[in-house]
Length: 118
Image 1 (spheres, rainbow, N blue to C red):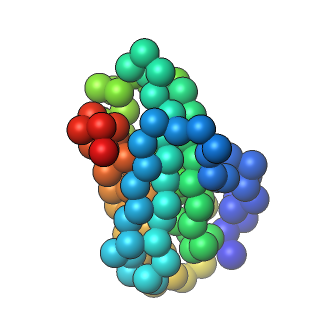
Image 2: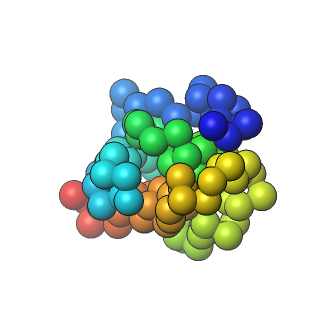
């Protein structure tokens, strides 16, 4: 188990009020990432969600820390590479296959849904 998994527990929780949501279900471990964003005046003011995978939870927590407070245009630019320094890699690399990609994909789906008013 990653050493800093608990660091993000308080960040990764569903939002009661949100502007858009997305579910990314094509993860390697078959555990979907559900994500909600709250956008006010073009700024991502809150991000929340649920995920069962402890590694995806770390990535989602790192993403929340990085993206909260950014304007939507800047938020689109976030990548897994931007989050990597916040993550403790798993002991066995095969335990975390592309978790960063899945968390970022869920976030971008939510941004797209916000833009399209879905």
